[in-house]
Length: 107
Length: 120
Image 1: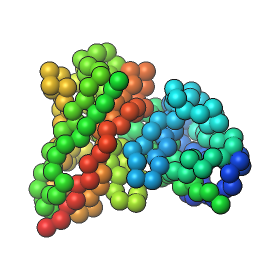
Image 2: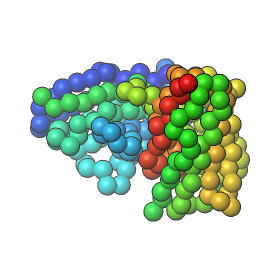
Image 3: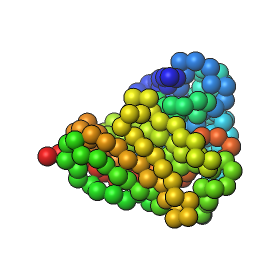
Image 4: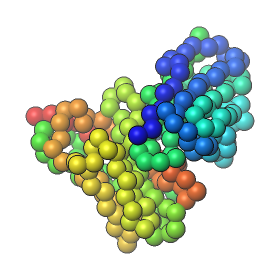
């Protein structure tokens, strides 16, 4: 099975900061990676698929990059509404594992 | 617009079998590439992928739960059913179903989820 490891597990940043979250796959998954945002008490929502394709309606401050085993989610200018837990997901092959999540808070 | 809704019991006793139904609209599970997946989330913990059924009735399961899970579809009713046997308190979680995109097995959108508590 492919394991997905996110770092950090949590982070705190100020409004306007650039934030990066990394996701590492235990083996190469090409660009078969998605990122989700789960706000407190809410259902997860798709942010990015194919490692870097922005889902319709997602603000352009979100950017995904990477291929193979190493991936990055970048928020270019953190906004208060970005407080959430972020998950990466491998969909290269089943089981379609998720990372353990990164909890993002505002300082 | 695609929508999904999970229905089923919210309280189950240990050793019992859980049956959850995902009723969806806005797409047909007989269309090439379509799929519906199940994901769960224990309180305060991470997402865990459980199972996925494809338009052609192919199925994929989490290896750690494979012996306990069954996923089926009823295309005429726009429903997907997940059955989990031999429930344990560690199975307490919010269970979500989600639409699988034809181009790849990412999930969008998700249903609202149902909190299932396993307790005697």
